[in-house]
Amino acid sequence: MESKTAASIFEALSSEVRLDLFRLLVKNAPNGLVAGDIARQLGIPSTNLSFHLKAVVHSGLVTVEKEGRFMRYKANIALMLEVIAYLTAECCSANPGECQRFRVASGVLPGILPSILPDR
Image 1 (tube, rainbow, N blue to C red):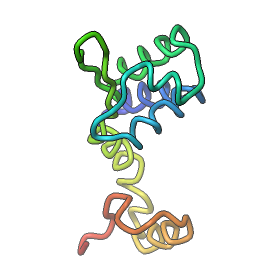
Image 2 (tube, rainbow, N blue to C red; image 1 turned 45 degrees about the vertical axis):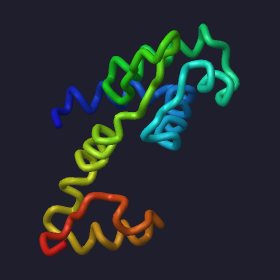
Image 3 (tube, rainbow, N blue to C red; image 1 turned 30 degrees about the vertical axis):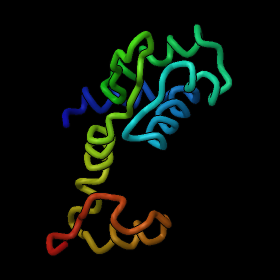
C-alpha cells in the first residue's frame, strides 16, 4: 500500500460519524446495509449520511451496489486488513519479539493482526 492511499483512508475515517459508519458496516459484513438502515442505526439524517457515505466510498473503504431502488453499502474488508497490515508490517523490525510483547499488552486477540514473526 502506498502512503498516499493510506493517508486518503485515514482522512476518510477522521470524522467520528464516518468511523462509526465504517464500524457499523464491518459489523454487518459481508451483507452490508442500505442507506436508510445506516441512518436509523447511527441516528443521523439521510442528508447528513449521504455526505459521509460519499467520503468513505471515495476512499475505497466502502463499496456500493444498486439493489432495486435502494443502495447497499458494504465494508471493503480486504482493504481494511491491508491498512492494518500497512500499519503493522514493520513494527519493531529489528526486534520482532518486542513487537509481539506490545501485541500481547494491547489485548488484541491473537490472529487479528497480521503475522510479524517469520515462523508464523
